[in-house]
Image (cartoon, rainbow, N blue to C red; front, side, top):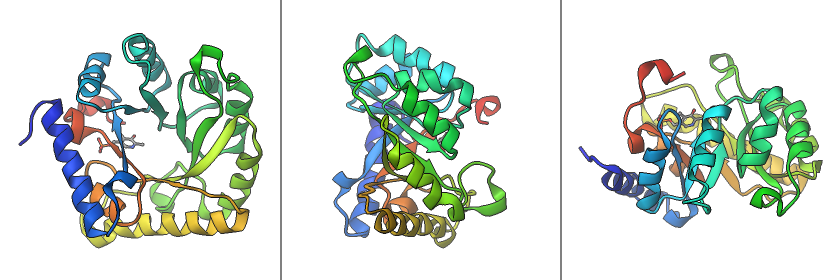
Length: 241
Ligand SMILES: *Cc1c(COP(=O)(O)O)cnc(C)c1O
């Protein structure tokens, strides 16, 4: 078993490369998002020293604190918000993060757009890059827009000046066999292709795949995989949420 951030990072890159080659894809098309939720700023800095630049956070307060703690030493890190987002927490996300993957309501999108600081302020480049979270598992999941309501939401979000719609994200119900893992990812890719054609937009992002199923996601076209425990180790059970 790999231990230490450098070895873990290398192992995850090898997994991504293996799956990309099996799919006939260029491994460079797949960005690795290191999900650092529940781990401290020091763990992020250790991963940054190994060359990792993109980090994902689920909880607003925790993420904002880490971004603040690391900004001086690591100003070029790219921060992605990937957790459930309530309307009353949008301001900190709009100001502190570069990406949001978990938009599933137009009310939250409107607030993020209005609250996104103009370019140059706080050193953030506008607009905020966003993905719509889609519920591809039906009853099993409470977050994400249902596929039927996706085109309507996408149309609204694409119009918001503070946001740039990049694509779709999903968190399927856990599955262990490869075919069951791949099905929801294939579905998300089809939804993305359909949406891009309908709206006439280039949606270049499919945010899908985590530690347990990143190969299946890469085989189905993931452009961002969100990997936590395979990079940072197991999270304390209580904080897994
Ligand atoms: C925690 C989390 C991940 C990473 O999960 P691992 O199984 O630890 O790789 C990815 N995406 C989201 C939205 C998460 O909340």
